[in-house]
Length: 461
Image (tube, rainbow, N blue to C red; front, side, top):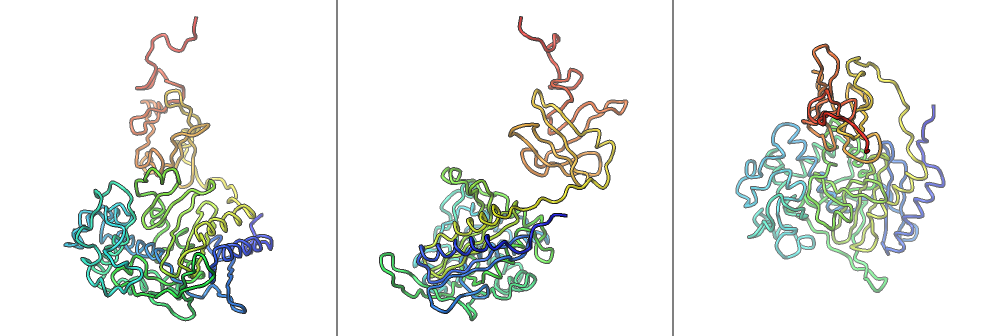
């Protein structure tokens, strides 16, 4: 049986090391660490530094900025999965009196709640959180800048509200809840709200001279759920594996998959750039590859966590400078290097364990009007329906146990598929959300859109 190597090939490892060496040099970063995850485990770590004789490893902490938001989103999804709240609930239902309560939980997660991008001055990332002790200090006098739910407008205060929601419903500080419900179960023992040795110092590098300025390390206070955390390449590699596969101790695979689904209307420029946002996760298309994850920045630090779910490869890149390296591009390149040099082996083909004869007879070619479709059987009694050739509407369907199926994705998500049978038990057609699929184009014996013209099909002349 052919399987992929657990360890990367030497040539792949060299290409990865070269990529971060170039990024550290060209980005003029004091240091950079990176990790690559494949098949749910870290398979490579690398680092570069400007300090002779020292090299940070996967256990050195860096500040990860807005990757913190993904951790906060996981806590909110846990509350949803427990039935404590609904994603469609307005914030006011659970956290009244904020002035932004008409936004739903899902809208806050997807940055479509209409809130401002930042808290009122002074700049919250470079000043003590003690300047903003209450939610009102974070939201200001005018928390809503846009109609709720109408556009994607990235909002740090929105995640402050979600952190406050977690605290209200759990009855404990956000960081304590995070430690108990996410960090400890996943074994992220080097992720914390405050730096723990060994950790990198944050620096600003002068744009026109090779000199540096130490950046302050501020406790963000109320803004912590938007960007407080420190972590390591090793811990974020484990977190990336969780976001790709789920872990029932924290969130199921189905729930983390939901986080990766676009949940925000994209701006026109975002459509061109191929970027959007899910529930606490950024989503982008790069080089024909769908990537999910999150970036992060705070004065003195840049961070990126990127996952290519279809390739089952993820990358983490951390550096300790305010600007310079394009860590998101570096992470995407690390994934590309592994995915192209050592492409993932598909799972072996295996026959289905059991097949219902009444379902098997539905397999094959069907027509919606004159459009040719194919219905195929998939695992667990499900089916898929899609065009025989080219693009078009396609979906997978889950068996309901009563001879019907419900759409899981694509155009027919949530729609009901059923086989309509004649009195003698033979199949007349498929009904899918009022669309009729027949074995022949416009079958005259089928209901609308069956054959209409009494002269039937004909040529010209």
